[in-house]
Length: 378
Image 1 (cartoon, rainbow, N blue to C red):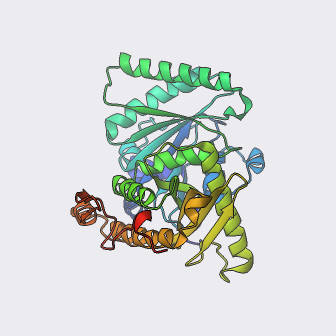
Image 2: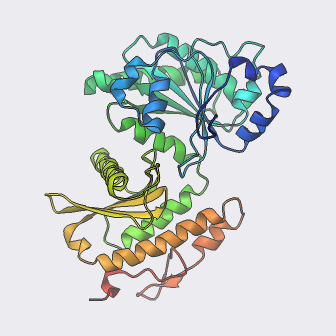
């Protein structure tokens, strides 16, 4: 089997007996990467989410997916910047049976995504949600618990809000009655027919990135010194943004950035790389000008990571300044991840302080000076 292909792992592989003997190597390999669990009732849309986000399956084609019969482990670290595993756990399986080793399932999990079908009667799903998160929390209190209120494309805006409000209220009331105070649930409205599923998965993945505060701070410094309105760091393969600046994310802007990445990949596959995989070509850049005087500017950071910026036409006239600051940002991002796992990461990156033009001290994204528009070369 090709190492990049997903693995179908039999359910019995995670019983206490089998895991301690035959599955030792697989257990060790899986423990090195963050693990995201996809859980929920049957036909709630778990496998469809995985196929659309990580395997580029068209949403309409997921209608023909069969029910997942066993635990499906998908390593998404190949040809991608992000590095973790997705475990699709079938809804028809009673994984709280004594034959299962709950520590094996939940012990190394970074996040648990519980998918609820918003178009179905979700009372049974809420019971299953409560049972799942409470037991998982006892096994691993560090898990991030996420609830995807899925298939909302068939609901009106009022129905979406009412459904989210009711599920949020009932789920938290159940936790309050069980006297579990430290367990926090995050709720997202999702659909595979728009970009909401990518944005929701972006939020989940960001919680598993320890360097996120540093990346956000770097992007804040970058946009403030470059005349840029919004910037995203995207994983090219999955279109998940691993970081953005602190300004609010506008869904329309996010969709435009995703479509820009699709255009860039399509053009690269046709005219760019000769290899079979169509990732980001080194030194790739893409510029799209909209009819409302807005510019979308994409620059490659690594082979599988791109920076997409949204700015006004007048700000883009100082492209030399922006390119220089992007170069500084690239160096800083490389430095952040080269120091991954070291205690001095934040100290090394964020302690490079230089005086600003008013005589105080300002933040600095690397050992290079980040010029402000007033200091740019004419």
